[in-house]
Amino acid sequence: MLDRELLNITIEKFGLEVSDDAFFRLDKYAEMLVETNKSFNLTAITDVEGVTVKHFADCLSIFGFADIPDNSTLIDVGTGAGFPGLVIKLFRPDVNVTFLDSTKKKLGFIESVLNETEMTGETVHMRAEEAAVLPKYREKFDFATARAVAALPVLSEYCLPFVKTGGKFISMKSADIAEEVQAANSAIRILGGETESDNLFSLVENVPRRIIVVKKKSQTLTKYPRKTAQIAKKPLK
Ligand code: SAM
Image (tube, rainbow, N blue to C red; front, top):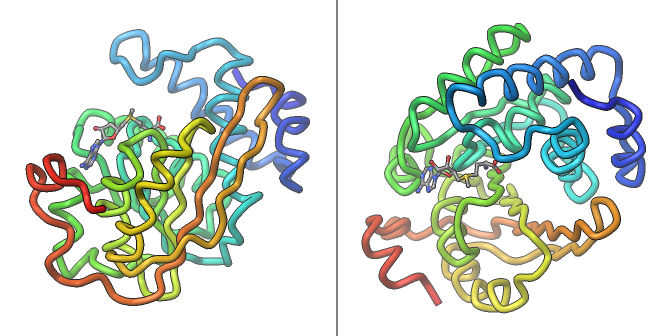
């Protein structure tokens, strides 16, 4: 299903190349994504080039902007059909990935891909703001990632409470969000974070992307995250 040459050409600029084993797993995932998508809507992108570049190379680009040490713990918030969490897991099986989403059926799909590729990972069927107050998950992860889940001020309140002090929150965005990034600065500080890097780049020609890396400098106050309605009504600023 995936175009291996196109994948490698696209991720070369991040210093990456997929091994035979990783390609086998990623390709199995792509095949299952497109097949399952016929009966259950997981993605609007189903052509070989689109899936290769806009899902798989896009998610792998994270490794170009964040050093993820061996055996790190990572929670992918609002993972949907597994982006970027499942791509990270299949590319780097040493990373302990937790997949969180409020939609159970999508997590079922992730579980079947994990089974099929003989990988492991916990799936959590909860809203981020509900899971992040539980001792089992609060400040327990080296990394939190999110792609296409919410605007950055809201997303920071969802994600930063999961991250240990010294860990990182990595947000994958489209490029054109200067105002959103500006608006998130004080939310990030309130939640104990500090923007480490804000990276604008082209995945391929005319596909601009932005990866924002936030370092967790101090613990998040226990009053965050707030309840869903409050977060939506009054994003931190
Ligand atoms: N990250 C995936 C991707 O890039 O393809 C999915 C993006 S999809 C647009 C947003 C996902 O976030 C949905 O699967 C939705 O169920 C989930 N989501 C939104 N808000 C959430 C929350 N507060 N807690 C958990 N999941 C949430």
